[in-house]
Length: 330
Image (tube, rainbow, N blue to C red; front, side, top):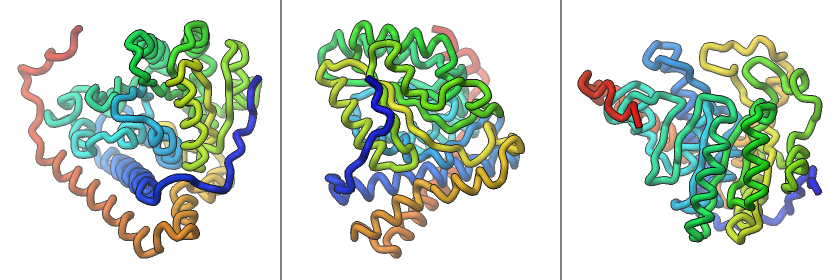
């Protein structure tokens, strides 16, 4: 039975220090990708680069319920996932700048960051291609019997790909410890979901595989935390997989060079008014967790951290030519 709307209680049973950590993480993502967009337009970054601005609540809310030893599989729009899982923004920046100090020694770029020590099994530039990998990893975790889980991220367009359906089916058959997190930002490249998908709510597809499917407001970080947390706990206990659809929106075009002219200005402004960071900040101030001055200080601190990451990346060495084919072949 698919639960179409996940209802979130007003009470928040989260420690203030954790709430502040989540707020800081969202700001780090916003500043990182805002900077990346600027660096791309100035030709410091080459190759397809996809920003996560507007979707920060999904990564931070979902990842806040994982341990360091849990796994994630990311997507082409994966900077937010990496940062939320604890990734080093200096190494990330160096990687996007093509430097030897980057996560993949400057050879992976924006879409292929991985850090096995943090459980980040990698991002993938092919739509839905990470989902079968996540199922394989989930099978390994199940065989280990250590209670670890994996979050498998994908976009709305991935749900029309055969790999999505194969992954969900097998995960359900074997009751694997995986939570599929669909970031429904309404667009697959330049195509609106209503032009390519016959249903409004993607979570109902879970029922075809005997799997629970839920929908959550992807711009509400605490709602995402609670829903994903429940499904992670279920997976840890051997209850099998879940599909969580997070309704959200990317503020900018598909890639840094895409002006997004296929979208109306009014639509963009409506979603910007739902800014997940501004919404969370307002909530934290209302709850007395932060003052406006403290929230602003955290924002400035996050901005400085990204500035330091840029400096680190710019000063890092280029990869040596003798490293061209190292780590390329398995």
